[in-house]
Length: 273
Image 1: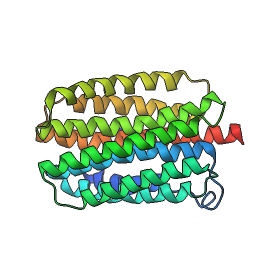
Image 2: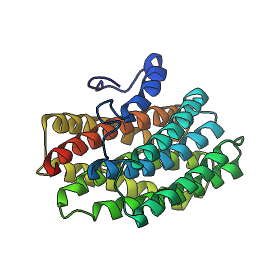
Image 3: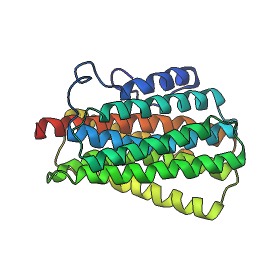
Image 4: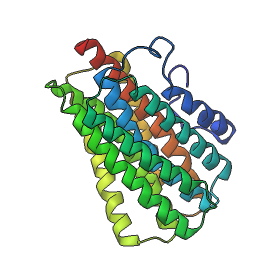
């Protein structure tokens, strides 16, 4: 997604292009491809694994429900590439032995997740993919917290917090799809409420944070508007129209939150050197 994203939800005629380009936003630039990985960027990468775990489960359930299946297939392929890119990036980080072990543990669980999504979707298989995605999420979250603790600079939590918004956007969409697939209604509805509140609270925290740039402020404004679209979508009944709206708006919100996390990553790298 070169340039500033549009403020509107992508129309059906643009959807495939937006989804195809989305992966490019995560790729390292030529300038940084061979440089040692900074701490903010390492946090960004492990935090991104959290979102990719839920994005994978979301797309797999979406495929099971036969909701925009071409998009779901593209998202699954892109998620796997982004996992691979993240592990390659982290290989350039100066990590302790314990942190290297944690990253390798995530990679093992990601490989297991990849094996599961390679199988044809069924309700039972969706449940297995969801459980494995949550295993990846738990490990990635622990590693992200461990990386954040390496510095006394409290502002690093902004990269973590903005990165968590990516995960929440995908877990909210995933759980919406799980409701449509007739998984445990009560527990999933409770998680949807908790995650929606957490997302809104994090938006407010980020907006009030002392670290800000023009790029951050612009992306925050865009994120707030895209949240309105997405929140409206997940409030709809999980019928064909509602499922399509969630599939589209969740990807758009993820894109914006990824851009915002990248801007915080850039700002913290400038501060920390």
